[in-house]
Image (cartoon, rainbow, N blue to C red):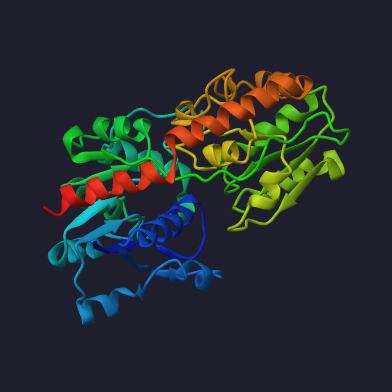
Length: 377
């Protein structure tokens, strides 16, 4: 069995990356591997996050003790300096969860128009684009010119092996110049939790959207669609982020119909009572773990056709797919699903089967075991 180090920026549950790290460490340890973690920043729930790992390291402690690992898997890392140091000591693999390594804006869509981008990274063009997005974050006189970002991406790109969890992300990495032969796809493990919820049980349906409350997640688009719907339902919004205050102002006119909840590392309570989960994403979500997790809870999906969503949201089979940014279309899809409980139950059942077939624990472990054998030869 392998000695593995997971590297992440946060010791705590900030988003899908940290949830993936913790769950993967737990499953790999159940099958004999020993997974430790290196992180750079603590959050309020750091103790809960740490409980998934055999041992936690700071960077200074790692350099001081020099423990032996068969494989170091970098999920997130703050700078090229840390990555270079790790490569000097260990066999390093880069796990690419999202667009942060090759998009200085991190969202991979264009400012102002917010159209999704398909460009490969270019230092002058992408640095200019980033400066239009975040002028307050630029440091130095007049700003850092995007050089730290460029150095990290160059160091990442020089790596020999990469892991992704979606075909969409594999295609994006190839577009960015990563050799296809260097990329391994390991599907995540998603558990099954319940039997389908009856939509015609006399209670007002509840829809759920969950994730970071940032512009790219598109919750504002969902709120724009609400006045266009005919159906009676309540909406739970689970998460926090820099767009939260603006979203609350936007939702104020709906009163108790829209309820905001803080992010939790255990969203099962909300998933269990949701008749459907909405994916109103603006950015090209690389995969979106919340999608198959909702299907595992027997909740059909309604979402925009962006990024890797098609890998589990099959239109008419596991939910309803809407053209990107089509607000009236999103409203119609909500009405269509809530008006047809039998169809919604059928989609929920199909979704559960899809999760069982494509995202089982057995396939996850088999994928990781094969990767570890190949990468450590």
